[in-house]
Every structure is written in C-alpha cells, then in structure tokens.
Length: 123
Image 1 (cartoon, rainbow, N blue to C red):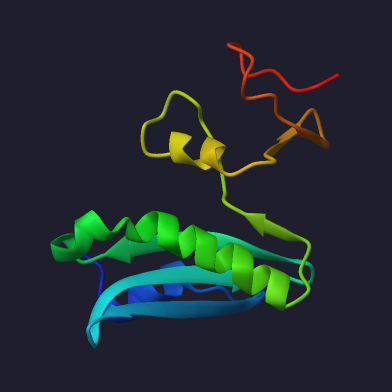
Image 2: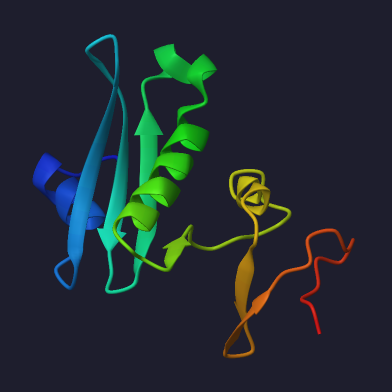
C-alpha cells in the first residue's frame, strides 16, 4: 500500500459486504489511534489498528481491543474476531492474551489450550 492513493487505502480497509467502522481514540483532544472494525451479524472483526508513535507508551493496541470487547458486549454481539493468530509471529502473538481463545482448525471452531507448549486445541 506504499504507493496507493488515499481512496485506494480506504477501499483496502473498508468492506462492501458489511459495515466498516473507523473508531478514533483521542488523548487530550489529539487523535492518538484509529481502529478499523467490521460489524458482522453476531460479531465484530478487528481489521487494523494504528496509532501515533508519540503515544506508544499508552498501550493503545491493548486499549483498542478492550474497547472492542466492551462495544461488542454493549451491542449484544457474541464475538470479537481478532483475525489470524500465529503463535510464533511477534506481531500476532499478542492475541493469546485475550481468553478464551478459539481457533478454526479442520473446518471447526474449538478452544485453544495456550498453556500447552504445542498450543494444541482441547480434545
């Protein structure tokens, strides 16, 4: 997306098959972060979150996830989908901090047993 126009970037982040929300988080009346979230029938799907590096000490990624959990509950939604999870990928492994955690494995959702060194699913 490095050479894309602003319109191309918005089309990349947005969705034509569901409502896409752009949630802005401010600190002292200054834009600090934006979370892009798709609204589904029974869930929210976290698409992307970015923040001003000036506010990196505020843990805005964590705050955005916690906000989405609360918002989903307020809306009566069942789930918050955080997207793909790869345990060995530093940019994705934060997701195992939010429990319970489910994975879609072999065409079925099941709870992940994160305490297990292999990260296997419960039987």
